[in-house]
Length: 383
Image (cartoon, rainbow, N blue to C red):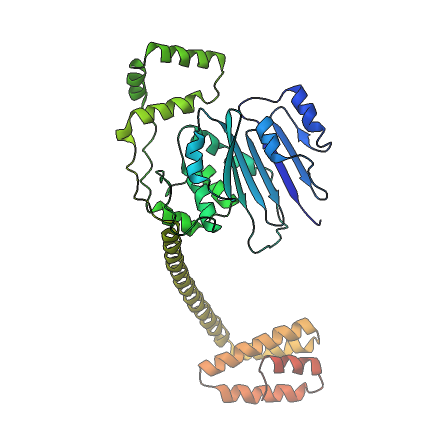
């Protein structure tokens, strides 16, 4: 297989009509098309459609994956649940951009493999499903995805070093599974995320209780309650719950975390470098400890093996003779390994001269077995 390209589009807020599915079918006869999705994999050729256009007209999420290192994630949300001006604070480069299309704002996130290394063991199926929940989080006011998008621009050096960071959302130090999936998909440096998280307040503990929500709802104007009930019954707002939770949190600013002091992109880079150096130092120390532990364990096991061999030293030499007598290469190898063990035992017990004498006798007896002698020489068993 020379290439791999995976396209997936998902409609979340409303299903596709029959006419829309027919329009999509005209773009690809091979794609799997349902009322909520469009999926196609290419091992040759290219997709004829424009992902931007498809997102503007039909879909709410898109994932693209190619084995030459390109990765792309797009999300669409209604303007009334995600302010385009807020998005613009974070999406400031090629790696993270955004635009408005009608009543929607579309976020476009990219990553290109800087090393240009082809990836052959790829499968895009299931990836988008693991990330889609971040869209509901955005609708409810969780801006961590947008901050990760800004970090992607920082990592790609699309942000000037003296550029201050945008508002830092709470909870960067405790990314949930969907946000972690996005960070891994876009290959955002974990040390850079850790540097940013140092300036992020802890996430708010849980959602508001039923009692808190009941008290808040009682105080809402009647016209707002009427609008909420109408939207609920008609299903005209698929983001109703997220929008109401965001409105509740905005009405209770004392429950919100205190914003962190803004840092610059360059400062974050420097902090990430320090964290990386410290992490690599700890990892190197851990590897050294593991190496020492393994070496000690192996040495102890070796001594136990030699202790067992020492119990019946003559039987070991007899076994060497039996193995050589078979004239089989595999048995030669076993004989040589046993001789190595006998040498090490004699060195440990201070009887190396006796071993060398018996080895010289063995080599003389089997002087016409070049295969055996070669094995003995390679094992350092020469006189």
